[in-house]
Length: 223
Image 1 (cartoon, helix red, strand yellow):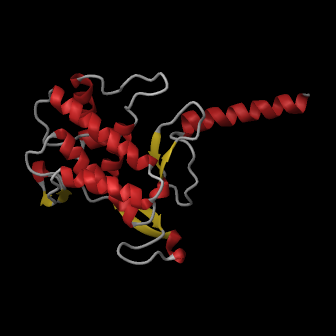
Image 2: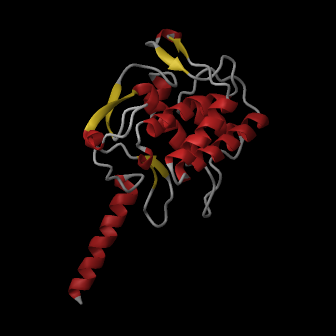
């Protein structure tokens, strides 16, 4: 969750970029020597990635309740991620977002780039994706992929779907991961340069497992 998306930027919006190594350049054969060449991820894309990860991680499972259990929770999610152009929400919106969430879960579970591409294509097509440039509310020029007047579900499907499409085009689907902690299955996007991230959070899951491994070694050494 990125508070600045809600406070300082629209979803998506802005010009700032992050660098991500890529295995290929869109529309060309993979270049194995390009795996350490930086590819720019715009701030717009990063905000969309934060939103899709946040959305997927609201799904219920293993005793965890649905993080989008009611319309009020959906509104909280929309506000937290700065999703723009969203009016009054209702039960129909909630049900539609649940369906979009299931499709995004399928992208993270995809066994191949082709499988991921198929799901993303379905999502963005059903959402009536209509790319357009905008500088609304005084923000820098940025791209909205959702159609004017789109529902919140179609908004998420279009903008988040296009953000995930970037990884398919760049040959980086392996970066769409699930936490390896045994009691956590949160989704995350590995933006580390060498694709080495294993946990959704190094400060929680990662640190907890490192401490457990250290204590186990101490017990083994003590006999």
